[in-house]
Length: 128
Length: 376
Image (cartoon, rainbow over all chains, first blue to last red; front, side, top):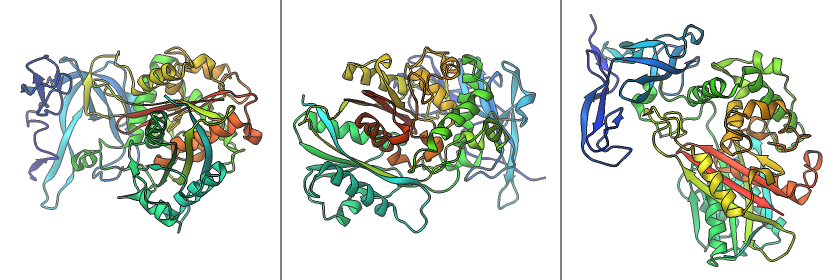
């Protein structure tokens, strides 16, 4: 059984949950978590595990591999609305746009992108 | 503040020119513009060069080749709006009295295929979160949901602009397209097909700006550059997240409002427009964001034929980026070369009769949006 390695540290937990930030000054959320609030400039940004459930807002599918991409095509791509008042750019588990509808409920999952040089599965997040 | 006029224009065609360097293309456009303005190679006091992919001191290489160095030469990078940013800086310098004559040029030799930039982190590319056409597709879907736009409208934009491009010898694509052709081309990212996307390519354009000395010349009535406000997940800033907030004013609208105020010209006063049609939906979105129609009115404006050559406000008479392709640093200046020809009455078979007020618009990476208004 290959080990799973995140495509990048600090984006999601294994549970999985997206690791966002919540500004203590203005209350707005962000993803990924940065050192400052992009809306009010405060440096009081607390870590916030974001809701794993959301609704689909916009979607498409990518049919040709873009530069630097190391996974299969086609793959779903879109925006999911989370209850924290956040819209997140995300990969989608469904790669057929005609199978998706506006406002449908979606749940966070981890998906395999490719195998790295050590034979580990490189994973990223997706909603589906 | 002094009035600013366009004294000269120059253009190297947009396309693919294997074996030709970006410097050679820049030199060609600059020489034309200087000759058109009847300005000597030492007859300008400063130069601003719009480019994104040409490397360090790209503008210097062009002016070195011409023996035209000695004054300030500043490269300006503002994504797709680089040329518009260069015009804004040059026009402000002349208006304030800092310089009398300024050379503005832009050039690019884009890598082939999907535009790649250093903007995204490697992990974003690896995870598939970087492709520009996917972001364009999400904006297109939003327009379809909120403005009554259909895939047929997207095809119609391509048909219109490619039809105009037939008459532009400097365009990359000079063949008419039918809606059937467009919809039969490869699906890139639903709803966008290949022919609905402009091609990154190569080219150069140049302008000589100077303090207005003659009446009847083409005036730079306004040149505005704006960036995005935070919060819109679909803005050209391409953030990884945004807010559930549909009232974030787009960069294009910020730039347009500033330009209309500066020029004392409103959208109803315009005779001809060249605007960002990176993809077919972007043209329709630009109608709304520039105030050429109400929000939600883009499909209706297109359906009425208002933006065709025989309509009340022809848009992209040059064929737009869909016909010309997009060499980033040159694209805004290419628009202004076209609009100067239009206002001079020199646009040949593409001439919009009696054009007196024109608007050029670009928007892209940054986000950066530029709006330049020319009057005569």
